[in-house]
Length: 530
Ligand code: KIV
Ligand code: ZN
Image (cartoon, rainbow, N blue to C red; front, side, top):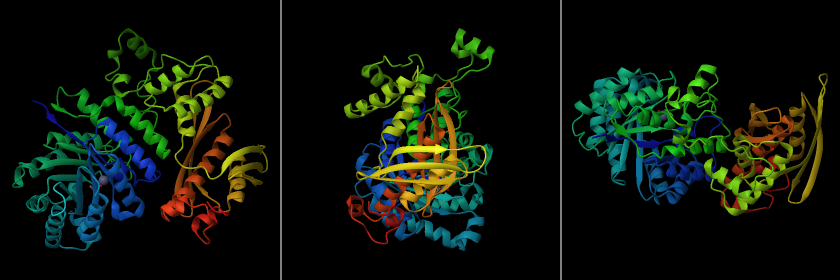
């Protein structure tokens, strides 16, 4: 009989801590709800000691999402574990996940501790966690580069102290498949008391081996896998959930394992993460990339038309990717629009549908056919969670191939209209500077990308910007027929997010308040109060 593989999603923890992927509290809760719909078994909601924001996010996810186990990460010390437990207080099914590095490299250069000291710390930390929570996971960080006999001792100490899950991370993405598989065999057979302990994989993609190593770990006896949507995560990322799950599904003939993931929610989960973080997946990304089911070569197209099985090992429907069979146009009504959104994985409430329909009719007036990409872009843009402090009312730019460009912007805040102009190295730079002049503090661009949305020359441009305000990065995303306008809107969206987050870190009262707080970071950022 096939064994179940438990899917431990760490998008909100290991994924979220990677550059450009940060989410605010509402965004994390929305993502957690989608992960619940997807059917993940365990959801790692954050690292509560890391920041107040992480603590609050774990607390909110634990309160909102009741079916999956909610895990919180803690280093192997009292303060971390107590804080994680406090954040999990309202969870229906809490798990404390504590970790400590075990490789000699980490012991010598990072922790400055002896092997004996580390063994004691593991036993103490797991015991301390166990006294609070039945479900305790221990990770010997950098297990992949840890001396094997010592790793066995560390795992033994954790199991004796009450760990219910042992996670063996390839923290730096260094292992090759046979090595990673053998590590699981060794731990499973050489650590006493493993009968009731679940072994878990946790792999990073530095050598492009994360999913392959995850499958190797399963062959070695793991039954939990730690992974993230779109493979986001530290450096090159973590094992991608969608790739792992579909590999297990498609090749169940050789790996007799199953997951409880609702694969038809994979595309919607990927899209939602892209929308929330502004970080798009590359076109050729396995499973959820735009080209994953596109056949360009004539021979392939011919084969697929005769029988899709010739070149397709997965159907787009099985991951919930809608087929492009209906193209909406200006004669399409609300009903057709709602149905299309449903197929794309969006359940729109009535007011949202009204707003979407309004945007749709505006677009359909300008564009003959409205494609799925257009509809998704409209939602991405039209339903932001962050209250807009400044909204863009008017935008004009003048540029030439010689000399500097000029932009004029008009922003509205609480009914008052502000306008200003600036020059810059190109029209986008001029627009950003004009926005800065109104908001008061300049942002700097960390990343700027442009994609076309939908086929044809009448398509819209989607601009994703990462901008740095007061030392922190925020993303903005917008689409428009004009690249410069999309850039200006994206930049303003990032600035609005910055204001909201900075204000939130001052506490709930500050978020609700509209009064001016002298000397606060936000007030310097946005004079006139929030
Ligand atoms: O990569 C790693 O080692 C981790 C641990 C904290 C599990 O993310
Ligand atoms: Zn990791």
